[in-house]
Length: 196
Image (cartoon, rainbow, N blue to C red; front, side, top):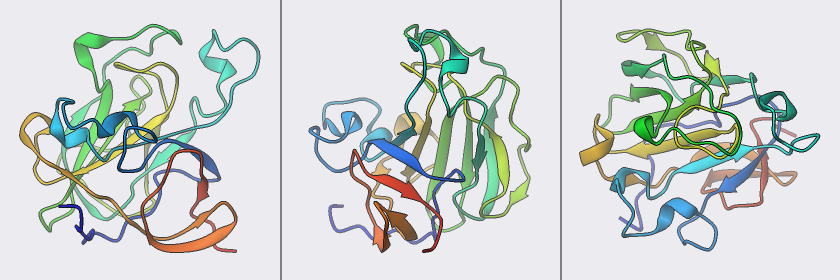
């Protein structure tokens, strides 16, 4: 699967410029990349966030908290969790690791998952056909998370627990001020959908 090419035309799941805090194929750049990690569907996942103000103990200290999360591609919503409560930074809800989340079927054997969304912020419903760039919810801090951020992963089935991770390349995005095409992200990069 190391040579997998994403079939879905993906964009980043947010507006503006955010930092990649997990991305890449190795554990040095991506905490999800450990081959022993479970579930396997997370192995190539990305995390996006920004810096915080103050001492970072309040959700409002985080610039990304309550920012709009958008759909990376066209597809059909097949699963939603929306009732998880946002936890205080530093605490974790291990009982519901993904927190509030959306799984979208892209119609070509690829499924996208967005998670850690804000409590009751999801604006779509199961069965909805959604468009790339459409607002689907708000960035939150639900589930097994250290601070507010957006988690995105591509997988080969509808269920996180028994699907395989797929490499996710973004069709055309800005990375550290340069346009990149069919690009896999690496931790530390500043990325956006904006075209220079």
